[in-house]
Figure 1 (cartoon, rainbow, N blue to C red):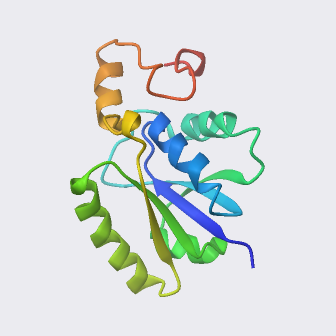
Figure 2: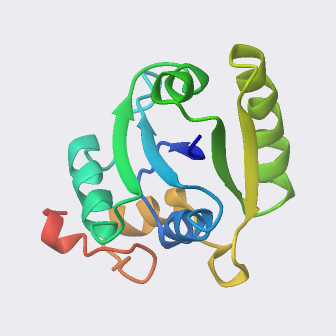
Length: 155
């Protein structure tokens, strides 16, 4: 049975830290599905469809990586896609506290799912999507933090 992992998140935007987790995750899993969840309580800064395209472009040379968007509980999506693992990155202890609770709920919804945490590579730990959004919003170049060029995406 193939080891399929769902890497869920809002990815607003997808960062070099996220890319690092996917690339390292490929050493553990046969397939990684990057799942961009829709959150009705949040308004996206970067358009969902454009972010899907940018992430697909980032991993065009990796046939074991695909990108989907979804509007459901993450555990339900994992079950529907045949993913028995949820892949998550941890930058610090605050991330762990937050992710630990979510992993327990996901296990309640889908008892066969296991959450696998990878510690973010040290040089990428300070990067967060919210910091990148703030920098971009105020006109700063964020190319050092994302694995694609935002200018070519119309931002």
